[in-house]
Image (cartoon, rainbow, N blue to C red; front, side, top):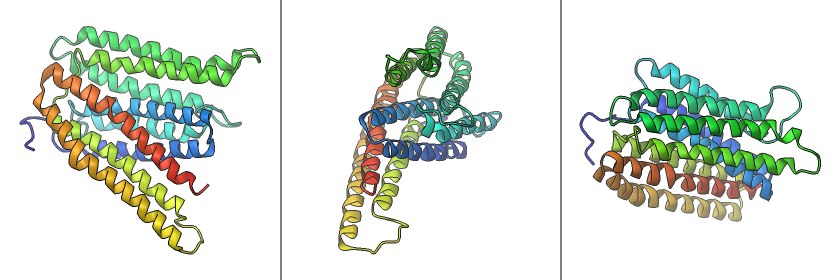
Length: 306
């Protein structure tokens, strides 16, 4: 497919660098759920996946309208990468603070808010340049502040509750509520100043995150089959590995040879607010369950070896 003249071109080295941090974060989520394999642990894993997606999505919209490898943007993206690394390190303590050191949940929350705020500041300046996006940007910032306060409450409120109240449940509800509030930012902003300027770049960024999630399933196949473990290669091990990689290949093929082509055509065929709506609903929206499903598939493969 031909690229749009004047649009953002290839995915920059800065974006690829940031995506490497998401590789680490996704692996941390899988490990978290594998170590706390229970209904509550799975719910907490879903919440962390949603939080990570809310970190990645604004970076994609930002990189679609601004060259992230030019001017002041590389240092800005370095700050986002550092915050993302802190989130990945804090994921094992996302809901349970361990003794000693910094409070893990607060590290995760602060890293998340820093990433979201940084991306929104840049997108705010870009949005003011056309199409009357100021009202939607003001609404987006209001939503961000409300969601941030609820997210902070998810850490600060549970310890203050009486013993008869399930603090873990309250924490999960507040955490989920904050992320759902934050989800409204894209809904509001895409109706105003946020636009998909470069369809090819936008589609390619989402293809790369799918590739990363699929790569994690391959790593999990190796873990489930005892890669690096002192054990003989048995027929069962070989068959399991072949079946696992066959499923991954089928998923890879169905996305890159079918789904990616169809939805990218739909994105290119639209323009203005309609294109922003396609980017919001089909890419930022529907790619989330794809990534979540792949992470759970990787968890299932990894859990075979536990």
